[in-house]
Amino acid sequence: MKKIKKVLEYVLGEEMSQQKTAMALGIARSAVADYLKRASAAGLSWPLDESLTDQEIEDLLFPVSEKKKGLPQPDWNYIHNEMKRRGATLMVLHEEYLQTYPSGMRYRRFCELYKKFKKTVPTSMRQIHVAGEKIFVDYAGHTVDVVVPKTGEIRKAQVFVATFGASNYTYAEATWDQKRPSWIGSHVRMFEYFGGVPKYLIPDNLKSAVTVAGWRNLVLNRTYQDMADHYRVIVEPGRPGRPKDKPKVEKSVQVVERWILFRLRNMTFFGLHELNHEISRLLEELNSRKTKRIPTGRKQIFEELDKPALRPLAAQPYQYSEFRTQRVQPDYTVSINNHAYSVPHTYIGRSVDIRITERMIEILADGQRIASHPRSSVVGGATLSESHMPDNHKKIREWSPDRLLDVAKFIGADAVAFIKFLNPEALSEISRYKTGTRLVTLSNEYPQGRLNAACLRALKAKANGIEQVENILKNNLDPSSKSTQLEDGLSEHENVRGPEYYN
Image (tube, rainbow, N blue to C red; front, side, top):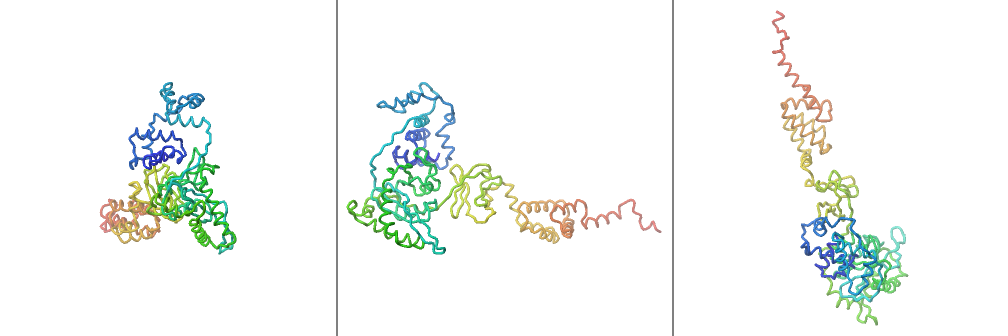
């Protein structure tokens, strides 16, 4: 579903060609055309109505009747041979297929199966770079030794390289590794250095960028895609083992290795800050350097060609995020690093996406945010919102320690002493709820004096719950109950002899 949205955004919003969109998303051009055709038939336009969920969009584009399996297959050998004829199109062949099988597969599925059947022939062509359109990014093959001051350990720093297609204007920096946080951080600083955002990012197929590599089934890492969405840039990774897809960065890496890294070979660095300071100085020289091939220098070409064509930076730099998928537990929470965060109780049992930043936890379902919390470092703790609770759970939370003591004050001093003995602060929310509601019920069933006296007796017996107070009252074990029965019994019981009996 996310790729369908991207197709609509790129073609309708960004006015990209269908071929470019297909290459950027790693899908067939016929699939792009089919998505657009379905969107038009469903009356969808860009931007999409924000109230539509992913499921609703999918139902509009792909009715249930189209999701049936076991549809009749055409003769793919015949289809493949027909496609060799001049003027042949899959659309016409699909129409002929439907004449034989009126309830057969839809055009999109027809194209997908044909693409799997036929063999592809690789082609090569010279790339023409439009001003401000593409930034190529990669890591240099060479590393730089850096001494860790505290331990004396020598670590090998990785060197991130980025370059524009049109001007060859280059950015480089050193990081400790090529892992996702370093990779994303380098991009954020790269955008700041260039002062704008291109239309395309062309990375290599390293794991920090691509989860599933491959020309046909490309899946971007979710954090990398999230960063691209933040800056509104299209990621178009080069194919694995195809350096011709990214010749600019291959050449720029070579230039950086020769012009910068080779010059650093005899220097000793104590920390990344020192190394990056020297890289920055040499980078400025590289971009200003005039050569026979670039007589005005990279920087001047960048200022004249690329920079005016760049899109403005996002209002705020991208904040590094990680993503997880979890099923909402029966207590309507998800867990991050052994800390529970609540979501609306109606999502119990459903799978949700979790976006984790340095300061926030966001929970999403069907692409919509359903909850957000400040991130907590308390292991074993819980961050809960009353708005996420069912009504009966909200009532439980209403019984705070202060409220429990306030109810006891209306009954008497002994009741207050008994509740303090139970220690409301140490009681769980459910225990406070049960104690408070039962105390209110007993105050309605028994006189205030008896209930207060029963609390006194329970206190002397060091009872551990309101149940003992209730048993004292039910069995008439409270002192006030005994005295009342004794006084009433002397004047009413038929077996009691009066003082006159002894005269």
